[in-house]
Image (cartoon, rainbow, N blue to C red; front, side, top):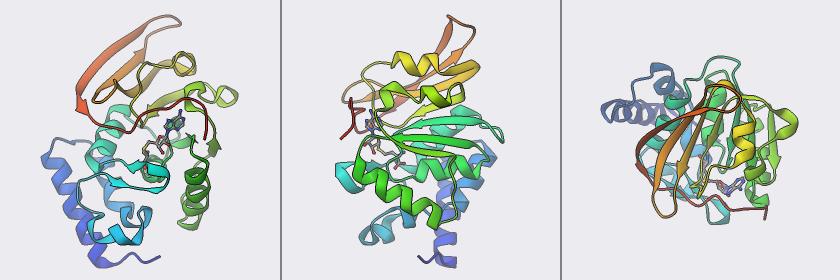
Length: 213
Ligand code: SAH
């Protein structure tokens, strides 16, 4: 696993592009500069890893586009030691960005193949989420709840109720909602029963599927 000056240069350029596209959170941009995205892709994609594009990973899934990762992460307003639930571990790249921001990350993946690959990869890179889990993210992780924030990285037809229940008061749930195209949606939990809803632009994700595979 090699990370060279050339890769660092490409990451700096990518962060600059993301800033031009509207990412303002300096900590998020720093995390993008630090995480070697090329190591999360098959070697065949190494030359493209720092383009602002999604790419295929194992099990017919995709690694999210860097802008999408930065946009969702920025919405979470991550503070050090925040306890964050991620649904859709996938390649682990988004997980790594959250860990770089000092978060305690709990992540769930429904594809066993990806769960195994990513569980082996992250520690090899010295990246330590609190907990990686193989299961159905529609259920969240009740045993570890509540969370300061929750990020869903697959397109969801509905907001799963268990995720709302597992959010702390004041916490943020960021979820792309819709089939085909998704509207980036953020819920802020106001109290036991009320959530404030904010909508952002359109994005395109692989679907959030029920049960595990
Ligand atoms: N954060 C990932 C995005 C991967 S794409 C990355 O940066 O690489 C979305 C992921 O969500 C896929 O790996 C898919 O298998 C997973 N997924 C889909 N439905 C799920 C569910 N119900 N529970 C957990 N993971 C799910």
